[in-house]
Image (cartoon, rainbow, N blue to C red; front, side, top):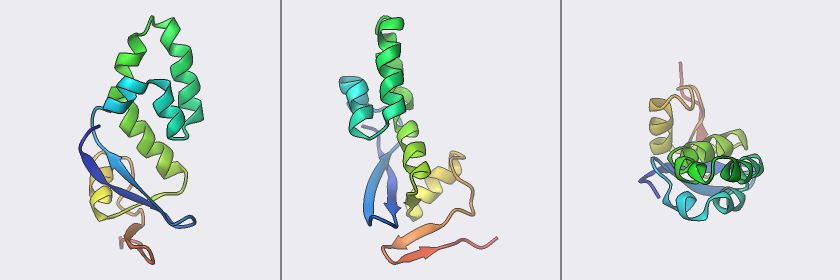
Length: 113
């Protein structure tokens, strides 16, 4: 697992998820099961179909992109970044600087223009 890049908070469920940057070791060892355990059904199907087509090479390539795919999946599922994650995600152009920032469970702030 890559280094932690911050945490994401889902305001409806109150759930916090830690996000990581870089190479995903769990994805390397678990392959499509890693995608399934993270609730990423479309990527689970893609990984299962790609593995026999690429003779297993995809199993070695997908971990380089898995953490980013998980971050995008969580953001599209309604999760909001904390301050550390906001800086990381802005730097890597995964969100705009106007995305709300979570400072605590009941303290979600919208950055000013």
